Amino acid sequence: MASGGDAPAEELIQAVDRKITAIRTKSNDFSFNELVDMYDSDELIIDPEFQRMFRWTEGAQSRFIESLLLELPVPPIFLIEREDRVYELIDGLQRLSTYLHFRGELVIEGKKLKPLVLSDCDIVPELNGRTFANLPRALEIKIKRSYIRAEILRKESDPRLRYYMFKRLNTGGENLSKHEVRNATIRLLSNDFNQFIIDLSRNDDFKFGVETLTEKSRNEKFDQELILRFFAFKNAGAGYRHDIADFMTDYMEAVSDPTGAETFDYEAEKTTFDKTFDIIKKMADHLDIGPRIFGTVDARTGEPRWQFSVYHFEGIVLGLQKVLDRIDPEDASQISSLAEVVRKGKSDPVFRAATGGGKNDRISLRTRVGFFADGFTGVLS
Image 1: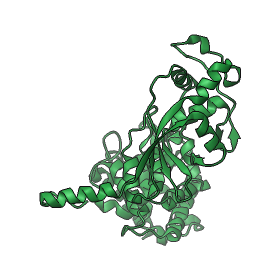
Image 2 (image 1 turned 90 degrees about the horizontal axis):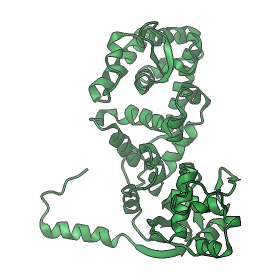
Image 3 (image 1 turned 90 degrees about the vertical axis):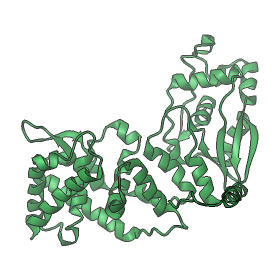
């Protein structure tokens, strides 16, 4: 990023003022009843990919409803105004989804959830066991008329500034993983690359390779982050220094920014991705180790374990790129030779020295990728 540290004071003030004038915002106080109506009529959108991040416990949801009934202050939500005047929720997912859940209006993946039954209310425990349908009439009216402040970024605002504003929001409640934040905010620049990653995550060969991921990792979209990691290191790895999360975010921003110089050939990259994981699947089948191809290795037996290792993923997948154009996935002898490199390499002391805790530095990355790249090159020579 360019530095302006030597700019004269007047130029600096003008630069700040220009950015301020490029942002158009307004604040509204909405009753929750209004928000329900807007949601039901598609005037308020919670993106389906974003909405899968709704994961407050029922106790946390119940205490939020209790807070509304007690008129306790709640943080604002943030909306973006689209060109068609529809509002899209960017920050406030847990709060708004909780209210919709309580009202029996929350739809996730095409299905309406059963209304929330209050539990774990600790200020007014008499609320426990209640639903919206069996609240006393006075409390039903009260909860409908409860309001929340909405900060709205107008459609006239500079799209890049909209993106950076929401990127810096402190989303309360459950902490989101780095990739969940990328997924939710990058669409303010462009959703093309993000959707491309989501689509690739459904590739059967890729899903096979990451089958050993934990449920928690899947919920936090780590499978999609692995695809981003693949493209970022494959295409821009020379720029990696130390903070991998920032590096991947910077790459995703560069590819997604419609005004940027970074190009991305979607058709060619999809072909590369598909071929890579087709070969991965065939090597795993040859070795008869299933999705453990990216697993850590038992030091005693040398056998891969059902424990996904991002370092094994990087070494094997990125190492393949050096010889990818020379591999015929239908050539059984080639697949056999490549598979033996994987089998031996996973237990090799040189490779293992570049894995484990604290090995996200660029030297270790270069070592583990180079190890497999050299091994694959050797058997195809």
